[in-house]
Image (cartoon, rainbow, N blue to C red):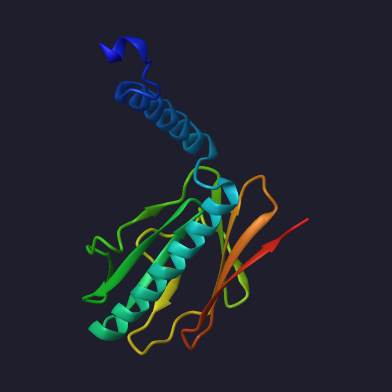
Length: 169
């Protein structure tokens, strides 16, 4: 009979669960609206991915005593292995052909000279990764078509590479 005179204060389990669901839905939409950090972050990720893949390919060439190469297009790149005096597309899943996300383009400079990327012979890499650890001196620039932010990966003949960010005006 006492419970008729006193009103219990507090929240029920169902009320707490409904509030938790509402909060999680709001957080999900906020996360989706923020996205992956924007254009600058996506551009940086692509440049870092390429730098990592190139480092791994160079190490693979040294460890396996085989010559490797990279062929570029404006919107992607392919890895090759020299087998029986012919360049063959790499069959390794890590070194599969890559496409850049929409809007990101690459430019290639070999030994200081600009290379036109869409007029190239197929199955012929421009950048060589030798089993001695040497590579073709290069500069690859990753950029958005409409943005001023760029990332460039510079490699020397001795195999040293550096990734740099810069803005053009």
